[in-house]
Image (cartoon, rainbow, N blue to C red; front, side, top):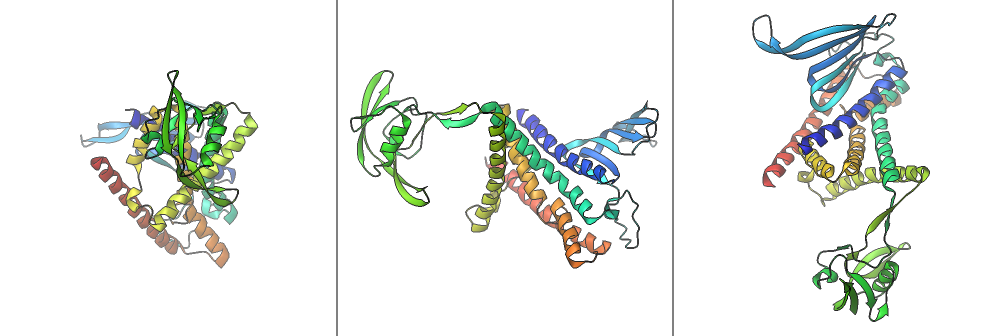
Length: 391
């Protein structure tokens, strides 16, 4: 239940914020919004802005005129608000919580009528900059959501800093310290009989002697022990050059120091950039062959991860939400027809070519894009199902 609930919360918030971006951007340039929906059909509850008030409608299973059980309207009522003109926008909560959409007046006309004239409140009648603004606003809102979450988490938790106490917090597999039986909580007191009082002293001493036998003295339950081991080595970038450093595979405890709002916003910016950096790194790994297409995941994997992060606490779940928001923003702005980035790409291409594509050409481009998206969706769903049963 935690997994399903966390998945619905994460996806619901991210999608709602994305669609609100399109909604407010459309309204800001005078585009009429026909429907704002959270979730996919069938509809469950709708609120429509009508002249003189709001019309509420409830949908559920009912008997139709032929006596068959079918999904349809079961209740409607009107809340009066004298003087309201009514925008005609239908606000909808739908049954399937796996997305959402904003339907705007003047989107591509599927009749393929190239002679159609768009009304002033329709999207296609607006200048290119306004159309790009409307189509980009969802991505902008997702980036903003990630930044706000990362900033809030940083402000709440503080900045992570390694404790300077020479106490082992975690050990790395297949490294000397773990192989020799050291445990979390052990306090290092000396290396080769040289006293150690801080983690900085400990790390500097170890780093200076790669591939070297050492005698390590440590305290456990107020009793001092000694271990003889040989340091391993790791190659790191130090001051712009490669250097070989000693290592035994131990890590300090990470503590969180309180920070101010300004520093939290800086961390929010850095974390958001890193979120996109992880996506770029993943793509590089796919292209180079370091990662496989079978590693890609879809809704099932997202749900599983959401459940795991939720069990770690609300702050962890919010961090996961921010990362998924970065992913949604990145994917949605790819220049693939059918995505927001595809719409922007077509608008920019028309501007550069100084001519409009015909409606039929636009529809063909959209269909190609939808085919690519469908292929991607099928791939990640197959991966999810295989992963679900093999694990």
